[in-house]
Image 1 (cartoon, rainbow, N blue to C red):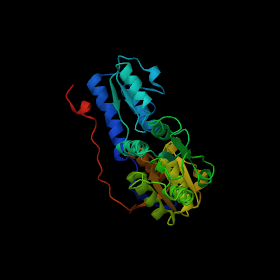
Image 2 (cartoon, rainbow, N blue to C red):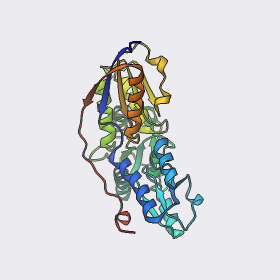
Image 3 (tube, rainbow, N blue to C red):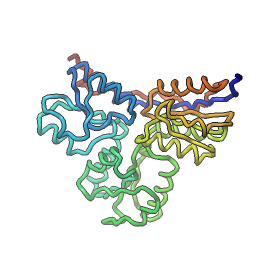
Image 4 (cartoon, rainbow, N blue to C red):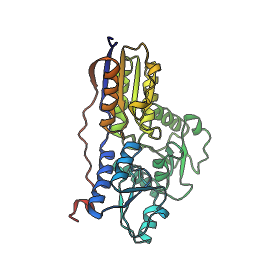
Length: 316
């Protein structure tokens, strides 16, 4: 039986960013240096395939530091942690390695700098997300107020409207964040913002590639985990940019084939914590059902690289 034709557009950039790549290498190098088990507080990155692979190599994933024995190394996830976590690890005399993405650490430093200058901080982010918890936890309780939507801006109660600064979670929708920033600036004209937006280069680049692809395809698959903020944002960006149907899939087995019936063009991208092997798996599944022609839509080239901490560059 003849397979139906399908033009497959691959977004570029897609998949792993420098911060995710660094975090995974930190766990792998820690296992080489100290042997198993190495404990990891929270998922190192939000991707089940990656976490399961590291678990098989000897990583033990926990949610709280209290679950870690004091005599084994612990790694803090790429999303960052409140200041209280490394302080507790130091008190317990634990070996710990901070795998916080350097671009998240930059937001932490911004928040502390503004606070030291007497400014109250407003954070644009998602409540309960590990990155938001980590950033807000850099300062004493009450010093950082959280907003998730433009409507939230009207509801917040600040100490002094002329002594404010804002920071953002790094994995948000660029366009949605711009709407919230506009609302903040309209209500608080003297609010201080970052010199350069906090949304990371990888998040921005992946969203731009999706926007460029959205008008060309009948549907889009985003490879990523349901708890991955940047992957979920790619689904939203694709829909807002005019793609009739966008679906988040962790693996090829998650594809809703009925929703793709009749399409002749399909876009694929992947969140910043999704490995390329999972994209290849999805492409192989499409080849099995369609006569596929592949085209790439590239909107940026990435050459960013972050070094692992010095303790893991030394010979064990």
